[in-house]
Amino acid sequence: MSLNDSKAAWTRTPLIVSFADNPKFTETYGFAGNSGAVNLEGQLLGVPNSRSKTVYIFMHPTSVLHLLPMPTALADAGLDVLCAASRYPRNDTALIFEKVAIDLGKWISYAREELGYEKVVLVGWSGGGSLSLFYQAQAENPDITETPAGDPVDLIAANLPRADGVIFIAAHLSRAETLTEWLDPSVIDELDPDNRDPEFDIYSPDCPHQPPYSDEFVTRFREAQRARNRRITNWAQDELARLNAKDGPERERAFVTHRTMCDVRWLDPQIDPSERRPNWTYMGDPQTVNVGPVGLARYSTLRSWLSQWSYDLSNAKGPMNAAKIHETPVLQIENTADEAVPATHNPAIRDALATPDKEYLSLKGATHYYVGQPEHLKKCIDTVIDWSERKGLLQR
Image (cartoon, rainbow, N blue to C red; front, side, top):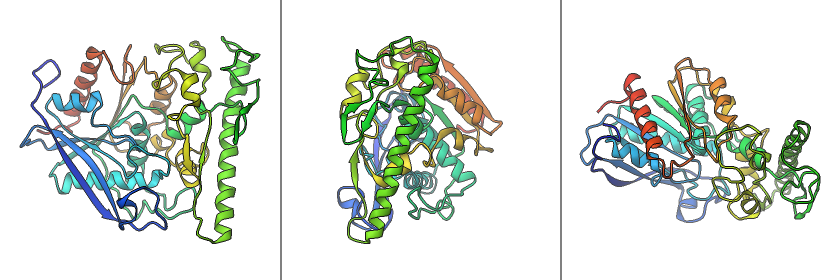
């Protein structure tokens, strides 16, 4: 069944997966954070009494995805879809990527052992793309036993179950790499975001550099972005070391990272050209989002910064993990008008993937969410179904 056919009469079934966990201190708000257990919530989208043996699992590190166009379109096509949340739903302030991988492994085990599915396909949408690559890399060849902060999270002992296939769609390189490409390098003082270097303050009319930008300026701009990420990383490491040396009740600290949505691509469409809308991001006007509350990494803890945002230390960087996937079939779908994913990201993942069983599709003119683009959404869903059937992954 494709989107050409009548829509399946599917329903939403709420699911809960619980397992024991005893962190050294409470890291998420509410009962789940101090009850000695992690409680994960999800939704199964599917036809009542479905006999399908295949489930498509969507997970984002922090978002919940059950209202997005693609999961619901897959359900419309008669497929079983599990939208699984991590222990950090809608709040990535304290998110530890290594623990999200454990959460995803629990969902895959639950899908097979409790729900009876024989095939599990991971669908990595947007920020879920790098999560899927990180997870599958650790499922194939686990090698992580601690977080970048040095806290024990043993992904070898976790024995993460492998997914049978991975779909990487409308997805960026990783949270750490994407944030770094969006960090405002004009910020001089992290405690005073109004103290800025005019050389890199591209949103100011007084900036000496105006689009179209020279290659030399873009190179220095990118270097300054990486330098800012490294300054914050070094500070976070020093703060953790100071707290650990005190050996007192304070185990963690939260902080604000100002101005995190600043990219020369948005003001100069000739940089990494694509069909994206100029002067716009998936969250709106880039100048507004740069200083607003929803920018990436706006609120973080020390440990979370090192795990998900540090350019040098995060274990979840996309190309690095793509190179560790040798045995899994991967379908990659690039949306060429994607206002959230830079044009360079998907080719970088494609080139890094070690598996010989990989396919790549560019959907010309497709945006991040397919809003108002039913023809592009249909092409996406039909491609997923065709690939799944050819790979022997879709059993229903």
